[in-house]
Amino acid sequence: MRSNSTFSVLFWLYSSRSKNGKAPIYVRISVNGKKLNISLKRRIQINEWDSTKQRVKNSSIHAKSTNQYLDEFYSGLFQTFQQLRIEGKQITPQRVKARFMDEEVENQHFTIRDLVSYHNSNMFPKLHRNTSRLYLTSQKYIFLFLKNKLKMEDIRLDELNYKFILDFENFLRKHKPNHYQTKIGNNAVMKHIQRLRKMVSLAYRLEWIDKDPFRQFKQRLIPTNREYLGSEELQAIEDLQLVCMRLKTVRDLFVFSCYTGVCYTDLMLLTEDNVVMGLDKKYWIITQRQKTHNPVKIPLLKKALDLIEQYKGDNRSIINNTLFPRISNQKMNAYLKEIASEAKIKKNLTFHMARHTFATTVTLTNGVPIETISKMLGHRKLTTTQIYAKVLERKVSEDMEVLRSKLETPITSSSKRKANEA
Image (cartoon, rainbow, N blue to C red; front, side):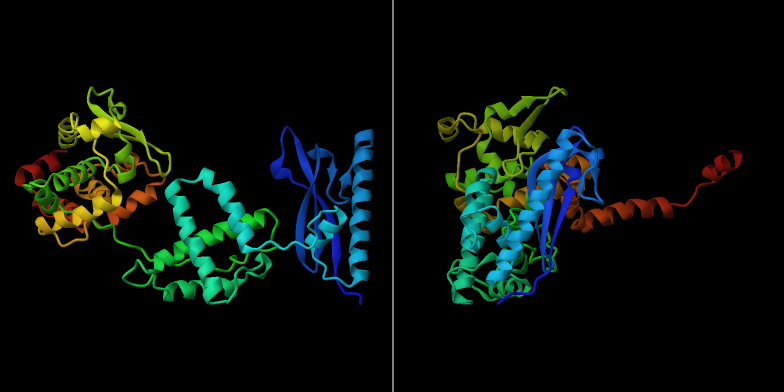
């Protein structure tokens, strides 16, 4: 039985990938509206291409050879399409390409497991290990969704559609992980879907699928408040008289981060080499963020300098050749809960809150420009730092009070006289 299919072949020049005035020639196979681009591994001068005739337009030997190659390529593709049509097989651009180019995997359909395997092998070496772990968690949920919801161990990528994404989203919202006390929050759900989206986009660029199933999906992130310590709360933690060495060490590391903005991962890697005398003849922390590899340069305040000096001879620091003793993030956050209890702080104290405290209470509240804060935090975009400015109602109140005093201060007689003389 012959199938009724529309088929077309278009040769085109990929001008945006030009180099030294030359661009690669591509062919686009279209079957029933589905398209697939193939590189012909040939480059020509851009001004020699006739886009109307889809051929090289001068009469040189190279041009004639290229045009003959295009004619043969077109003829071969059309004959392949006719063969598949006569055989009554389902015709796709991928199938035409595979048959024409004698690829061994003519009938291969890539699956989610193929994609995950390819992604992890090729992308993990480029990602930070913490990011890789997040991908592994998202992938675990994808396969759990396939097994529990769809009753499948795997699924072909060309079967992914908008409904699949919505069903996966609903599954995540209802799922309650063993290590969670509640269901997965909205933003965490969106992050898992975002990672799936990045993997599917990779498949699209690899031409494993013809269309992006995410093209109509809209991500809905809920803005969150960056919790931080106020000046009184920070002072309460600094003033704590701690007998327990482990709590004292964690408190000191937390306070150091409050006065530098250095996150946990970067803090654990700091060495004496990162403490550098700046042009202002004062000490700075100079490093780069492990997460983004962005450079970070922070002038050291006295409280931070005192803590560096305090731990200089600590055996735990000497063993690792670091500025401070190394403590796991899990233990750090667990001990901070005890410290918060001692200081009568009801907020959910985490080590990352120290970075937020630096951005708000220590710097922004005291008039440090947001552009300067952004540099010290190692942010790529100023908009990331501006999140902190949104939560400082006290700063807004103080700024408006200054304006109010200026606008409402009565003009004295001497001021009037000076104004008239002017």
